[in-house]
Image (cartoon, rainbow, N blue to C red; front, top):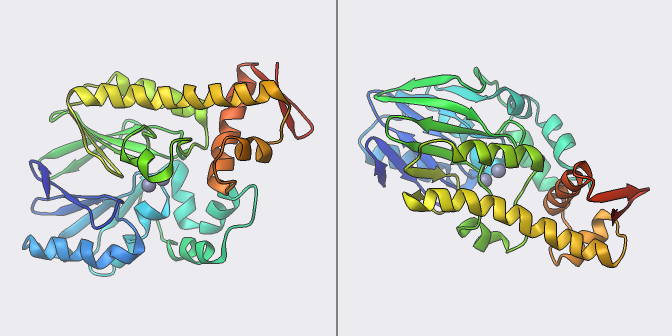
Length: 289
Ligand SMILES: [Zn+2]
Ligand SMILES: [Zn+2]
């Protein structure tokens, strides 16, 4: 569906792909592997040619955003653009697996999927770069936190922000994954990124997952992102007040599945609380200071 001017949202699943239409076409994220054909069909149904796709931008390197890159590139000569800090994860998925799975070995099917992303990145993006598409100028805003190389793309003229997963707020994303935590690899960086986004003039956020956020809800959603962080920090401190705990035990006590993603996020909360001297760590045990 058309969401703004020449920007279309392709949403065969809860993972969103955006298509910027002009004489040439550009994709922002490409979605989950099982929906590549739906993405291609959307372009054809618009009476455009897949061969005219000239650029694929990934907001960050997670499977639900990059998995169809290669299926699309198989039919066009698109260049791939990724932030310089996430690019190595596409060029060498082994780095991604090593940096992502720090607490347990990755499941075999996940390893297979990650290895299938392997590709050369043609354009290394960094903060402040601009990308010229047909009738649209997108500014790269580096918003680390969810991943280190997460970016938003800002259309200053139309006040639109493509946010990927840079916002881990409280909309449908939270309904899908439960009330407890977003996915953060670096929480302090995340907080700074959200504060930076609060200073941009934005009328519409086009995120990587439901829902699109408009007008007065933009500010509310960004503030929700920060509220969610404080909420979990408070929960962590309340639990550690009772007794010292390991990361695993704490995650379990918070009532969320003890998997790699949650362990990464909760550890990231703990690192932030350590930095603020609200928590201390001895051996593998965390306690309040
Ligand atoms: Zn993600
Ligand atoms: Zn995602």
